[in-house]
Length: 144
Image 1 (cartoon, helix red, strand yellow):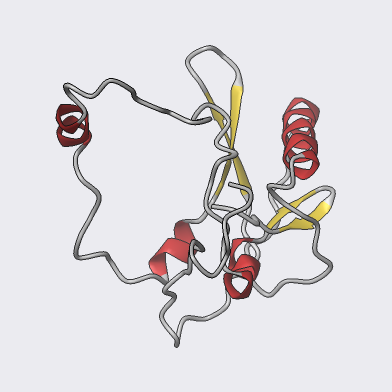
Image 2 (cartoon, rainbow, N blue to C red):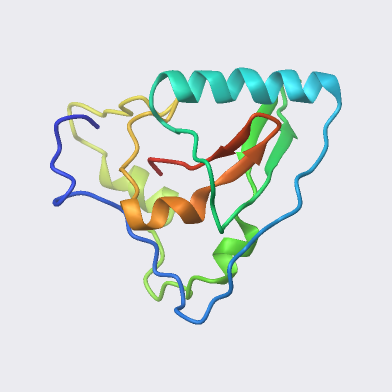
């Protein structure tokens, strides 16, 4: 979301201080999957959602999930990173409660929920923890 002061809206990871660095060994994919990954990476680089980095101490892998329409969804394997973050005592509301809360309102905005490019920026200090590896190199997620 452009034009919003990063001092006001930025996401910070609450990683446990004694957590050790995560470096996953790069997974190998077949040519079809590399093509899908490279297309997605190019698209995300173009819109500024991710950027290339030269060196990172936290490295995770890409995971490809086959969707119902037989297309691939590109995901990042943050399983190990999630283990370094304490559980939230106040989880998000249930979706049925959220839907009930909008009843009677004239407008409902999904912004760009399809592409997800309306995300909140990641704190610069935490971007390194979101680095993932591809056959093109290391890329952190600048927004989450």
